[in-house]
Amino acid sequence: MVSTWDRGLAPGYACGIIDKMISAAHPFQTDDPRLRPIHDKVMAHDRLDADDALALYRTGDVLAIGWMANLVREQMHGDRTYFNVNRHLNPTNVCVAACRLCAFGRKKDTPGAYTMALEEAFETAASGYSEAVTEFHIVGGLHPDLPFQYFLDLISGLKQRFPQVHLKAFTMVEVAYLSKRAKLSIRETLEQLKAAGVDSLPGGGAEIFADRVRHIICDHKIDGDQWLDTAKLAHQIGLKSNATMLYGHVENDEDRVDHLLKLRALQEETGGFQTFIPLAFHPYNTPLQHLPKTTGMLDIKQIAISRLVLDNFPHIKAYWQMMTAKIAQIALRFGADDIDGTVVEEKIYHDAGATTPQGMRREELVRLIREAGREPIERDTLYRPVTRTETSVTVAV
Ligand code: V47
Image (cartoon, rainbow, N blue to C red; front, side, top):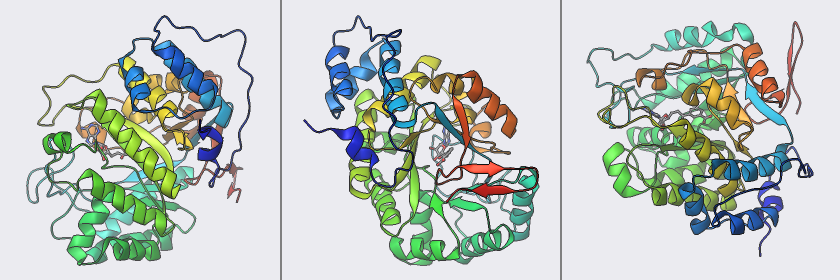
């Protein structure tokens, strides 16, 4: 049997493993016999397979799954819980893709469509700078006319103005589209973006890799293999990235398992993923608005299953904007070790009906984490601890 926890965490894993003793006060309990062999594997640090993952989706015993996911989370991170002070920047919502899952994208010249001039983008970035952000998270639509140079100038201009801020920019889908527009290979596109100042890539656009589902929710996007190939190339040229999975629409349990196992396999090859972020589908204002919203039970279960199946991913993020701060806080006891950041201004989820606040102050994030009984650690995008004083922000390298 392979022992995966140790092997999976080795590359680039800064925190080390804390072998926290299992609390005798909280013994594992379940009345679902399918979970017993999974529990044995988790205790032996053996990798879970597709059947195990399916059994986790199909059980109603969310507390038993949570017990196992929390154990793994504490073995990896103890009580440490990460957040960052970041700002989202969406330079354009003009998009050729017209994905059914999306409420953010607009066709060019239609009501609500916008594209920021470069100076406007720099001003918007600066407007959330009062808390000394350490990351700009930059994503937008697939604009049919903006030249590749616009994106290179956006990145180099931001780097020039905010040299200490990490630029986490462009999903694999945007990179693939830019490469087509610029008539460059994906590798060349990534290399030019990196040279301009991109420091890492966010995890968006992965949705669900299965073709059947992709044809329904995001027909015009790159397919799952192209998403994975683009991530692989990014990792090969030294850019870390995140990965997401959009759940709670027309996918089934097998599609979710397939998605997780494909990410795990690529991570085995490259070690380039930092964080996995499960994203709950928000149906409002999308062509799929007849679908119901996800429930708290599924959101929590998805966090726990992610932690258990993605044994080689260092971090699992409970994105508070998507889950609500209340569910994200509970997720910190069900496998998540990261709650994302201050965000400042979120558009993608709010266009799709999210009722969470647009942003959250640093102190509020700290309070949420402390009240979950965890230790808040402000991190930069590469998970290096950030220290703040009245007048300075320092990243431990
Ligand atoms: O790719 C779009 C999703 C993603 C909807 O890397 C929707 O740290 C739900 O990827 N309902 C963008 N989801 C957000 C994203 C992200 C967020 C936070 C942190 C990170 C990171 C990445 O949002 C899209 C798509 O999968 N999305 N529309 C919708 N209606």
